[in-house]
Length: 131
Image (cartoon, rainbow, N blue to C red; front, side, top):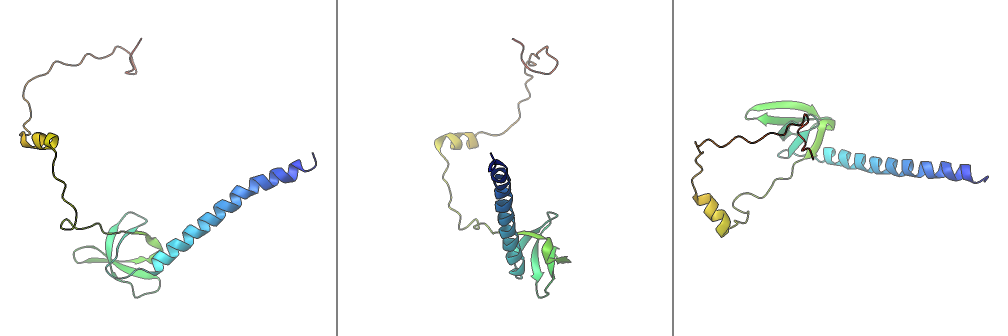
């Protein structure tokens, strides 16, 4: 009975200790990524802005081109992730349509002007079916 309290304290602090280590590791990876940014990298900021790095020569800031000819200066810590470019359309494998999808694609996508019968609504107040 005298070992119950120290054992309980130990069991409570183990998850706290392990989560602190995981968070520290993630923070180190984020700082390494932010320090390794180079011109031409496509990034996303913490506010969700996507742009291309134009100048990364300063220690604390980077210049990001967010549109053609529009360059803004940001703190490196505002970079959330580096976007990995997908394979271009020329390099991507082309999938041939199956007979089912080919038949669907051949049909014209014209909207129908015919009126359909209205669906019968349930009489319940919350839309669930009554038994």
